[in-house]
Length: 272
Length: 224
Image (cartoon, rainbow over all chains, first blue to last red; front, top):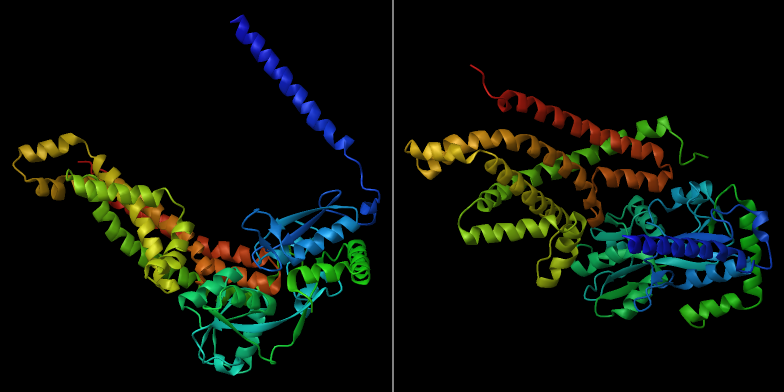
């Protein structure tokens, strides 16, 4: 019985020491040289928390081999956070509800290949544009009937709910092109619907479409139509957080000037 | 600017017809699935108390597999997975099949438990009165088992109605999905989701009342 007591005491003591050691750790980690946290509020002190719907290659996705988040947006935000003297933390968020999430301060910014739109800008502030994109039609490689938006008449069109692809499809309907919109929660599901034959086409961002067609040319084919105007991605920030918005814009400008932005761009999209 | 946490009465009134439509779809999918679920569940439930090893084995395997996997995964497998083996279903049939197969397993267990809750002596007594096995089941066991099955069955109906919200992942526009679409365009989360919850309650509360009522009607032992 005594032995058991001794063992128990030793265990408890060692656990207590472990606890102390862990508590002490943050004190020893060096603080970032710059202390810009004072200029703006953050959800977690010293950390830039980024909301992103991480299922949108090549902008944000989970690397199959490493299991880590990667993509153009991920690299961009990591660099921005570094320059602000902050750590970066990505929160994988469902696309629908991503803006209410920012408004409820679940994260500091949204960087998720989000196009700056008038409607969204009423709810959140956007940084200066960091990427130019446009909508294209992605269709089945075996289906040669679709050559432009007018051919979508009477077709089933898959979109990711609440994206600019969704809005573009709605606009086509308003213009009198009778297409049926099938809404999915993620872009991967919308692409699968084409493969399944439940949708004839999808309307999605050009880089995502071209990547899918490049990876799987037997399944997908991209149709570019001048009907779709250019779109600009922005980093969304809470309207109460003008300080953070200003800091991000400054850093973005800096990165464009010193060539860091181009480096990241070339890494993901090759030389423009 | 309308905040996420603000109740917007104008918006609420404007979205009522959309929510009602969503509620109708939810009710439609659930009723169909419950109907098929009852058929599957009754057969599987009887097989679960059967002395035939094959019937018992198959039904036990079915119940274990379905109860041991999340409904969401079942829906995804039936819609996105089955095309791999040549079964390519449209979203609505895939959704109804997923819900029916899932509720069937739970109903099978409810039926089994109901039958087994009738004391063994009842069967023995019926048989010694000269009734056949089927006759004893029909006139003695089932009427008593049904009384135990009914409340559990009512709960299963309500659970399935709520679980049907998972069908939104395969692009079916039911009540929850309608609410999420509204949040997407208005960026107001509080008002639409409150409306969605209200519509679910408008369906589940009458359902649970109905169960309580019918339980009172046929559930109590008649006193002489």
